[in-house]
Length: 282
Image (cartoon, rainbow, N blue to C red; front, side, top):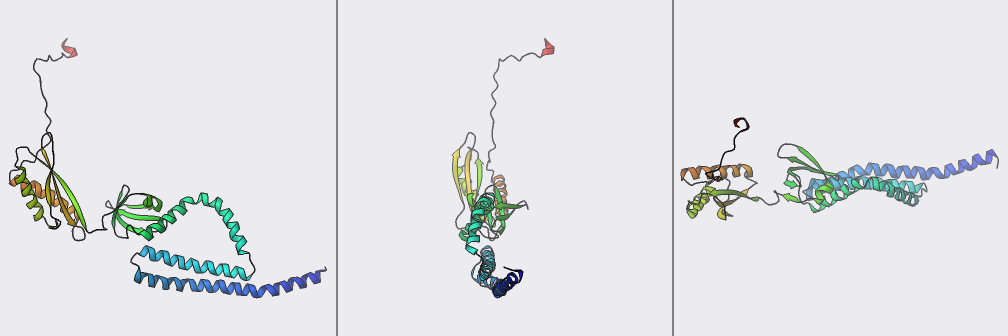
């Protein structure tokens, strides 16, 4: 084959390939141009029906990248690119890369499950493991909470998924407990009624469920009482109401001359024991 024939064959192949290339570029460009409007449309519809912004964000990202990837695949097929073989090759290489990226994958999957099951939402007050605070954001990789000390804690989703989660915002009412030590000489029935009346007088303590004061145990030097009351945390600060209850119990005990027993330690001294002499006295 001479150079002239080779050049003609190459030109013919280029002319045959050019329409497919143009179509592939048009398909890819159309996918890129369509991705943004489609993702905005999904965001608008999802925001109207789904209260959780994390789920909305996930749907928007899936729509955006799904259209772009589909455009890439269809565009490559127009130029007779072996997409199936390429994906298979990526699968083999992915086994190696997967071991290095397994933590990222686990966090991503855990994030999807958390967004689907929704054990908490943004703004909820939660305790996750040893961290307590308000949820700031839920991403596909991590969950961010702001602690009561004002610190921002970023928790990998796999740690959140495997930890015990306490959601204080799931139900509006929260029960609080205050322990009271009462002297043995005191009238338990009278003291309990005084404390119940005091609990009911504190602003923020709910009337229903009712506050209670019950005897817990007989200690070495005092009778242990347990005062339990409920607070609507959507209307009052739980910590503030708890503080007011403790203060009110102390004040009413002083006013009614109720003995709030202190811990007592008894020391017995025996007579007749010789005191050892100090070294410089010998």
